[in-house]
Image (cartoon, rainbow, N blue to C red; front, side):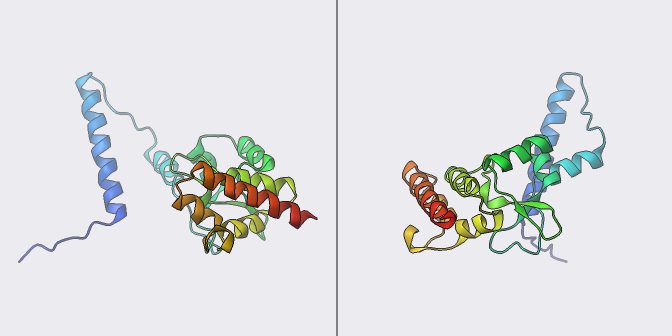
Length: 181
């Protein structure tokens, strides 16, 4: 029987990368005469999963989304700190019909920071009382203003350059003022 070639999925690659890093940490600790204490493995697994966005029925075009518990865990902040960021307009939150807040993952970079340009746009609309779903729609709707791209795509394509951030921030401020008028 010939062995089958297995296609490596992103999940397989992540699992292998974690295994390699854990094995290396175990060896480093062993060299120091210590052992790795993972504590409650299920709790650790839950905290690691919190770094991954959840699936939500409203995932297109805004999603996937983080829920409050997952985002608090990933960012390593309190719920109060997260809600303060939402109130100040530095994190985009959308309230679901059942009253829960969800946070579009598209606003975050890999390190958990809100992307430059998104912060300015969310802030401009939030100060004018615009709801999260409308802000999300503004961020993800293609427009001639950004060469047929959405504000998010414009920022990503231009790697959040100063010019791209300024263009998005200026347009958001202009549109937010017009919407509130």
